[in-house]
Amino acid sequence: MGKIRVLIVDDHPVVLEGLRTMLSTDRNIEIVGEACDGAEAVAIVEDKEPSVVLMDIRMPNMDGIQATRQIKRQSSSTAVIMLTMYDTDAYVVDAVRAGASGYLLKDATRELVVDTIRAVNSGATLIKTSLFTEAISSLGQSQKGRQPMETSSPENGMERLTAREREVLKLAAVGYSNKDIAKELNITQDTVKKHMQSILGKLHASSRIHAAIQATRAGIIKY
Image (cartoon, rainbow, N blue to C red; front, side, top):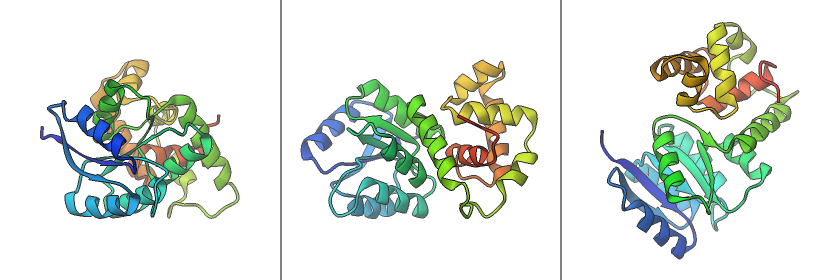
């Protein structure tokens, strides 16, 4: 496998330097760029096509939420991890809505940051379970009575899921990794991956977070 191409985005030079130093020691990570605001990050993503973006939230010119939204529109294969000092429900909800795959605080250990980069690069979602469930629940509540975000009916998609796929989706929606789901259901990680691919296909969902939102809105998952 090739190296994981990472873009670091933060408006504080000291933070940029610290992240660069921390990540440069990992032989599987290649830092392809640095940006000091969201607008610059969007431009670099278009030019460098990184696998993962470590994104601060509060920045001048364009904040991390806006930048994440634009990045996911132009490059759905690029995963974004919010790396911030703000541990609040509102920011997590906005990050999830924008398409972030991870949410870490800046006091996270090097091991946690690297593990999260590897996980989201493999298609997983890593957000602290309590924040993840609160964010998904809030998104589900906020969408009630509104025009659906999806072009297809989530209820119809849910009807096509098998009993096992529903089990997998419920666990994914509360932040379980593929490894954790496999252990919980006594199946292989490859089987979990196949179930997730089937779930996303049936629901026309772009990610497991997107699928969890649909499941919440359809009443399949309740918090």
